[in-house]
Length: 85
Image 1 (cartoon, rainbow, N blue to C red):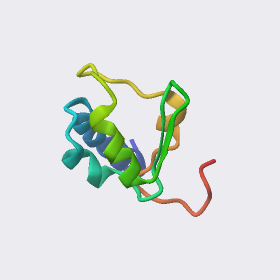
Image 2 (tube, helix red, strand yellow):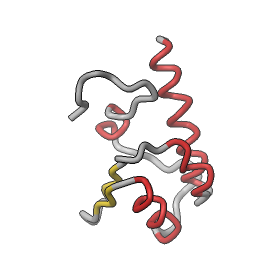
Image 3 (tube, helix red, strand yellow):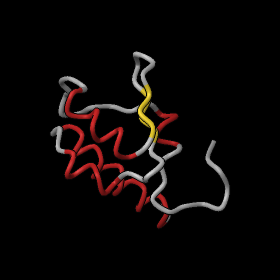
């Protein structure tokens, strides 16, 4: 696994650990200021602070919460010079 992939996997695991526990203190360091969180309901939270404020009220999550492959493919621990969208 490349260094970039390892860093991204470590970041994503840290996010999921905090997210599954409803622990925004664990989630916060894993998010960029321009983080976008889209819900299956169509609601979207734009920005790190908006997402963190919405997380405690997002309802129950299983310990093994899942994210879509599209969202994961856009997640990177090392910024690239190209836009990801």
